[in-house]
Image 1 (cartoon, rainbow, N blue to C red):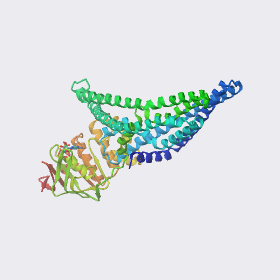
Image 2: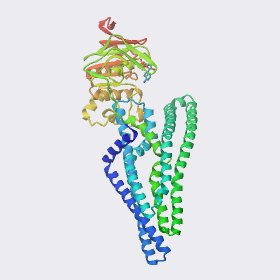
Image 3: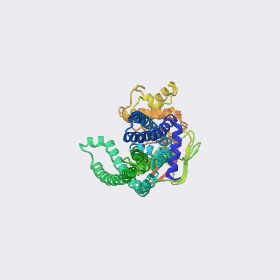
Image 4: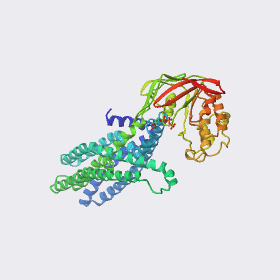
Length: 528
Ligand SMILES: Nc1ncnc2c1ncn2[C@@H]1O[C@H](COP(=O)(O)OP(=O)(O)OP(=O)(O)O)[C@@H](O)[C@H]1O
């Protein structure tokens, strides 16, 4: 789909959704065009009456001219105010849509999403609002052209070369500007990623006695600023180049029309009104293209935001139980782990995933919930699976809210989940941003309560009890075993051993399942 059609699709969608703002805006725009033409007609009459010394007419036209100027002022104010509301409503709606798409399937990293939201969203809204507006601009330009023709038929052939030059320049430089802007935004994205890392890592730097922004960030800042300087010089030059025909054209026609008036073709009033209205011919297009960004700059932002608006397509197969058969998992840096044979989790199972650090345990556990897709082999994720990891987020809200997540579940259920997860601190305690006002063990219990409340068929706990003491961990694991139909625990400790009927060994790039014979020497022993 061409860029214009894509923009038009969103424009129509939002024009309908926020019709309370869009319709009054378009009405005020049309009224403004009509009053603008009327104003120029009154100006012509005013100047001609003044030259002929008709005092009564001068007073009459002056009064109406001032009235039309005032009405335009009010109309423009209203139009701008309403369009600001419309654009902000669209911008906020787009932001919510982006968050919803990420909740559906977090396919884009948070840093990338945030950088696009902060840097591009406003521009993208301008781009989206452009197609329908262009139709009005074309109508506006046609009405002004007809009016100019009526005032002085020669004005049209005179202004045409300027309008053509303007259009050609626009067409030639526009796509280049789009490219330049894309490169500049890419550099901004790189810088923002470093900034985000520096902010997130600030506490670690502080702990190490490092009290300055890391070189990683200062270097990225210098690189980005250099690119920005180049881009701004380029886009500003183009901007001024484009302004030239819009500045020179109407004044050239004014001079010619004055000369013609002196020779008896038309009047001085015609010449003055012509200059004023021809400014109005370039103004709407100029306005659209000449803000620092220009249309192509806005469009490049739209192109960066648009992928974030698309729904993630879940390709993971889901089943009553979870299993991985000869599945291979990899990231950009290559294959991480390969499942040998089958790893299956059935109802009633308590599975312990163990192995050295970095072996691929989390990857495997996420795959059982359909959070990671295999590069090969078969992966069937469980329906109603909840994965709890140490990177799960707690909102700056109460413990209760962090468990319920504003779903309005029965209070009794929330209290049950909290008790089962060993939450022995007040439910109205605040967690702080990211849970920073809780200890690690408290954070983990809130996360487990949050999962239990959803009564998952399969509950995966990935090092989610590492901050609990042995006694509390045993209690929580026991509760979890009773609450979920199947449980997978990834742990370096051997606490899950007493409950496990299956163990998944992950080491040296391979994962395989072993069943457990209970009760041998009071402990469990594994058989391949
Ligand atoms: N999102 C990711 N992008 C790229 N590589 C990743 C990603 N997640 C994990 N890896 C890599 O995959 C490998 C396995 O990571 P994984 O977290 O699955 O291991 P793990 O056994 O759970 O480790 P640990 O016990 O230390 O938590 C590591 O080398 C890690 O660097």
